[in-house]
Image (cartoon, rainbow, N blue to C red; front, side, top):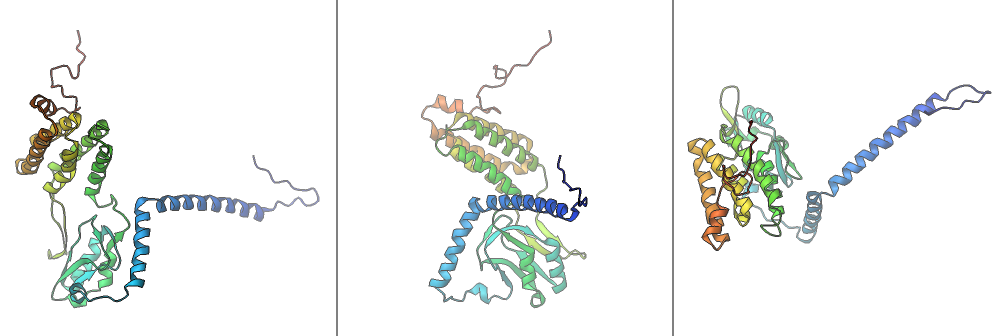
Length: 311
């Protein structure tokens, strides 16, 4: 318990001093939290990469100051990036308002999660009223950040999961198969949920139904390849991973609508080829090719999992 000692000669409590003291304590705590957060962000790999890149760009301006004109700079209907970064957010409503006001269409060229170099193509304006659109407002609606985020980028979550699996296989296909199986579990679950959802094109219309904004979007084939391709190519040398991959792909083949089978069949064929290349004997290939949700390789009914039976 905190106390303020008051002398008998002057019994007045120094309220202002006490209040200021408590306020300074709160400020110190806030500053400490902000400082720790700032240091944490600055020590991220993306921040260090950007630091080196930014310093090198500054050096380029000093050593090679003269620039050559490009076709993109002369194209009045092309919006270029003022600075480099990853496209993480798109202000669709803002772009629709700008396009409707100028009676034109805005085609966003990079996809969400794509890196855009400084001066590269960011959007194209199509229509009769492109002269009346504010290019700076278009740039403001297309947010370029330091790194990818999960705010709008569904594929980034899959990318991170696959990266975890690849890091577990960095030294050898037998280094950490259990971690990779856990990654495949999550990839399998995400793609299973996605397989029966409508993957609509990212097209924004105004109140009259006129198309005003288009954004590149991923299709089902792209998602399947992102989730499985690298894990199939790198992980086929581990029987546990190969079995889990086959189990996931065969389940997707059974669950997904028929029109979405081709990319799954493509990955199954690649898995068969990769397993055949990884092992020298047909018997071993057969063992590694047996689908199993746990990667153990024991078929149902052979004692892989026992259920309690009431007697």
